Amino acid sequence: MKTKRPWIIAVSVLLANGVHGQFVYDQQSSDESNLGGGASDIQSGQPMGQSFIPALSSVGFVRLYLSDSALNSMSVTFRLDLRSDSITGPIIGSSDLVTLSDGFIGAVNFFFSTPPSVTPGTSYYFRPEVISGGPFSVYAYNSFGYSRGAAYYNGVAVPGYDLWFREGVVVPEPSSGAILLLGLCAFAARKRWSS
Image (cartoon, rainbow, N blue to C red; front, side, top):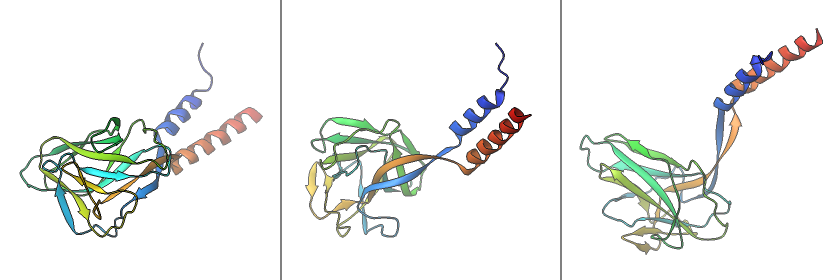
């Protein structure tokens, strides 16, 4: 049966593709106004990462500040694992892969396609992992003052040090263009039905 309202399908597709998100930060050691004072090599420090205690019930992303340590004309591919119990504990979620070009320095979001559920008030651990290429460094500092966790280097907590990180969820929201399109379609449909 042929549909008489093809605009419904068009609006659905545009709304689905026009959804953006708002970042809601749960835990962070710092923000972009304070990057700290140093960087730690990811590969040579394994297992390395950060412990944190979330207040929300899921983790949608972890944002780290990374820099190329070698400038060797190689791109680097990363994954970030979220773990329970310890820095080497069971993996409860892995981010989508992220590939960075040679010479990159900046903040990088590691998104979880399916945000892992966590228990608020419980310690969790994230570990950046270099899948290919390298070496690369993550920013860390001893004056961030994050009191709900610590940096880990070679599997050992380093009290007073934290990786530069921001962790939270992405709350979907439609783009202004998608809202405008929906309003125009509703107006056109109302006008057509009232005729």
